Image 1 (cartoon, helix red, strand yellow):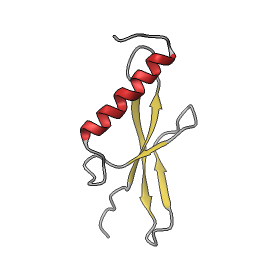
Image 2: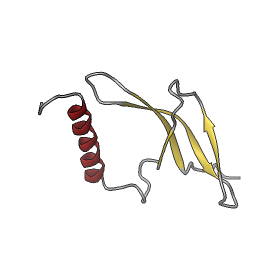
Image 3: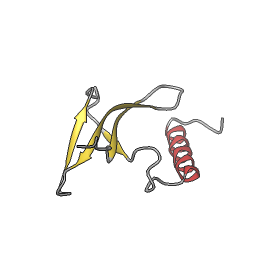
Image 4: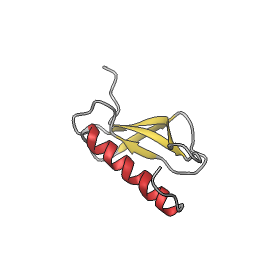
Length: 88
């Protein structure tokens, strides 16, 4: 039996003051053969209780890099706005 590739990577996001958030890979999710669910295999547990599932890097369904960067910048801008910061 060939090794199955994960359908998703599992991360926990570590918030860091004054820096970008750190995405720590903690496992993977594999689709059931019948397509009706996933097995999630974790190598660690998040201390905040939140797990983020993302498509593996290089997956054809992954959004274009410039879209991801634009979304990340929008999140940073919103976080700065909430903290009362102006343009850096």
